[in-house]
Amino acid sequence: MKELQPLFNFDEMATKNANSNGLTGQNIISVDQFDRDKLDYVFARAREMRELVQRVGGCDLLKGNILTALFYEPSTRTSASFIAAMERLGGSVIPITQGVQFSSVSKGETLADTIRTLEQYSDVIVLRHPETGSAQMAADYASIPVINAGDGAGEHPTQALLDLFTIREELGTLDGLKVAMVGDLRYGRTVHSLTKLLLQYNVSLRFVSPEILRMPLSIMNQVIDAKVNVRETHDVADVIENADVLYVTRVQKERFSDLSQYEQVKDQYEITTELMGQAKEKMVIMHPLPRVGEIHYNVDKDPRAAYFRQVQNGMFIRMALLAAVLGKA
Ligand code: NCD
Image (cartoon, rainbow, N blue to C red; front, top):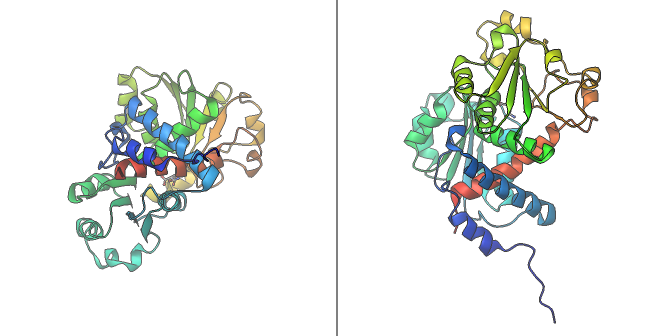
């Protein structure tokens, strides 16, 4: 009798984890940690995770591991997708998310003490915090890996990895693309991380923003140093016809000290079906979400609208990252 082949070889998966491209035990703080080799590795693992979820839903690779999700800022997708990723791999989660105001954090406990406490219970900490640099600070105190789930207007590396993966899966390549980013390029951490990652590929960049929300100089300087073709404009009409990727963002209200300035720029860009009529037939429109009016709902039916596929890719990427960071042999 022919022996049935298992759908997945979990021993092989575990061995792969053992040499997880230098990611085992590492913090994930910035996209600067990822060269093309590491990116290829994470994307290959994310494809395996997609296949695993589609075929059998999950496995026990991270059984016995605990993730603490510590979110000092609101989150729907990032926290849920880390939780789903951990649970699909058989691990468990301590969620300290929307309820931080009920925890000792609201009693004035320092981030350092909170981290040094939570690491006693868990194997990895996922942190979202309103201050730029907080993830690195937490990592300096922690003896277990810390994953940055957004540090103020700084970085959002796992979002950028899932964004890059989505572009690659939707368009089949990253090289040669024209990527237009629209909206709040000043405070939007996702566009900061994504821009830095894209510098490793042969792309052209178009930055579309109101004057007061232009891409920060520190990132512009990196773009210029990388000799990447880049142009800035205030008008989506300047970029819509040639863009392979239109990456739209929300104006980050919570980062404005002067709300009257927010009121001036909040409704500047709206992607409509009419505007999409001017875009290429093969291109993608993306958004890290949440959207607050930047993309009209009737654009959702457009096959080029990739933002909900982007959400699902987030889970596969985070499964791949957790498996790598926790390196179970
Ligand atoms: C983004 C964030 O938190 O930076 N959301 C997300 O993680 N998907 C974008 C945003 O809040 O506008």
